[in-house]
Structures are given as C-alpha cells and as structure tokens.
Image 1 (tube, rainbow, N blue to C red):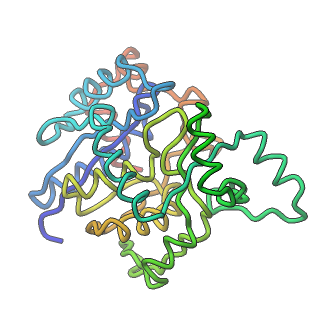
Image 2 (cartoon, rainbow, N blue to C red):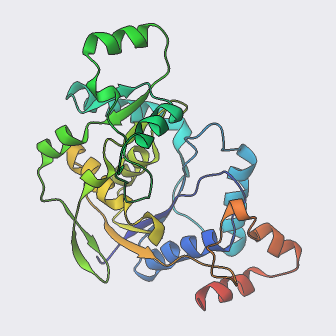
Length: 282
C-alpha cells in the first residue's frame, strides 16, 4: 500500500481525550508518511447522545494538534438516505427482518437458556424471537405502529457469501472471518436510522479508505464488517488495530470514566507539541 487513505471517525458524544488523540495521530501519521489522505468523519448517527458542541470541539482539537484533514468532514447524520438505500437493498434480498423485542424481552429469553451463547463483544446472542414471526405478523405489527430494529439474518447472509471470508491485519497477515459469532446483528436500531456496523463499512467504501487504523477493542467487529462488505460488493481495506491508551491503573481511557480531555490539558497550559510528544512516546 504505497498511497493510503486513512480516517479518524469519532462519535461526538464528548470531548476528545488522549486516547482519541492517539488514534487520530496514528491514522494521520500513516497517511502523511506515504503521501496519502487523512479523512475526518463524524459518526453522529445516534441522536440521543451526539451533540453539536462536541462535533465542533473535535475539529477544534484536531486543528490545535496540527492534525489537519483532507477534504470536507463527512457527517453521518446528513447522509441517512445513503444508509437507508443499503438497508432497502438488504431487505429486498430477504437478508434483514424487523425485530420488535425490547431489552427486557431478550433478557428474559436468555435467562431461560441453560448456557446462552455470547458474541465476540461479550453480549448475549439474540435468540431469534422475531426471526420466527410470519410475514403477516410482521406487517401487522409495523402497521400498528410498533417500533422495531432491523436485524441481519445471519444464516441467510452466510449462505449468500459462503465461509471463505478473510481480512488482512497488519503484522498478522490474513485472518479468517467468523461473522456468524455475532448472530443476527442489529443493522438499524429503533432510535437511529442505521447501526455503527453498517454506517462504518458503507462510509469506508464510499470514501475510498484503504487502511483502517483503530483501537484493538474494535478488532472483533471486523469479522462482521467483512460480511457486510461482501454482501454489498464493497472493497476491503487493510486493517491495523492499535493498542489502547490506559491510565496509571491499567484501565483504558474512556469518556465515561472522565478521562482528561484535550481541552483540560490545554487549560492547564500544555502545548500541542508536548501532547504530541507524549503520544509519540507511547
């Protein structure tokens, strides 16, 4: 890969911390070292958690660090029609179905299982309650105004693409995929027009991303992303999953734990050069 296109794709649900900056710097350096492109994307498809002030702060913080991006910022919430077109395509091929289950419904069903299987991310696999509904019942419940998510029918999807999916991970080589481990994954939530898994694969393909650098916590999701790419005929980037930054106790930096933000560091008088030096030394 001589001229890569990389991207940094945060969700504007809070201010950027050092972990975000490390991920952005990793992608930026890979692009700039090889004369490539570095893109900025805002994954703001979740209307309940994303806020405009955080979106503005992301651009401000990256500019302060000197991590300038190429081209316009892609804001996912402005492109919901793109994701709907993908969902319509999958629906037309019988690869998705509406799911009316609440979390409580799923929890009760899982609790009744002697050994409920789990997905690679640790969540219990969806037991397939709504997959068993008839077409007439689905249509009646939708007509009645029930809210629903859309789930990928994993068995049908795997039957369409076969079991030979792979992806290339830098430093490891070719990895054989096992997307079936995710079960009938959600591709459109009840409260959002599409899921992270669908949006990220769509946008990587649309924007011509050839190298995905992201945290190692997202590596398992690559198996599912590879399936969606295959179903839609999208190109597959090379992947490079980097370690996560941790605090003094070894716990990963996270918004929910109130990790120090770049704004905090700036307020304390730290310079962008000092912050970048800390990140490069990791």
